[in-house]
Length: 307
Image 1 (cartoon, rainbow, N blue to C red):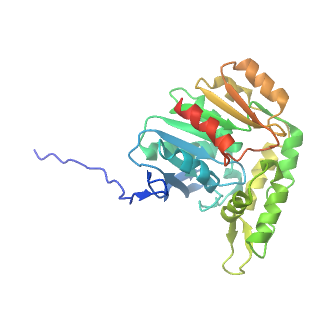
Image 2 (cartoon, rainbow, N blue to C red; image 1 turned 180 degrees about the vertical axis):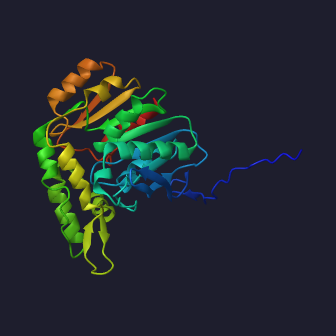
């Protein structure tokens, strides 16, 4: 009898050295097929660090953002982690879904399950900003969950109506811009709650949060405006996520901006009451949501994951 041995293919990735002589590896763009009610779609993600590293952290963005928001964080973690930063469907370079009603948490959870399977590891750590945190809680509370440690960025057990109305006031609009400078000015205004980002960080947010229409040369935000339709239908009233929070059994780090209207002090107090072992950190002068681009925000995340 002939036995066949299947040897998995590993991408050849050239190693680089930074100014300090530390060996690093370039970011690699990858994708997989996700599934929604109306068919398959391509989901893009960006991978940093050693692809053979069994220690993996998955980073998932908020409602209107994308995986490139985590570039700075990924560079700070890639010496110890294989870092995977995803563009959810309808964002960044992932496919737009043909039916807007498929832009809902169940689709994202299903897609992220496929991503974890694609990564070929039994456990991952999870960093989720807002919507990404809701997805993370959903996965973490499931029996036999692959989530080992969970970082929730400015989201928790309850979201009030005023915060949802504020988000609904701008999500789904499709303004056009003549250049990236105009994009940045708009994002500084709409996303002011991100806090005191540097000029370089705002430029990064704008550059990777926008796309240029090759036909007109105009710039648009880098997401499908139709993501607003199911959001406005499903989040028109306050949202209680306590079953998710109560179901999480893993170590949890919660980040909050002191000016946040999504994760209020009242909600944070109730979360602490229900889960006294959770680690909670607040950042002054920041609203929704901390971008985890500065050293004071990256440091606690790194310490928690490697603790």
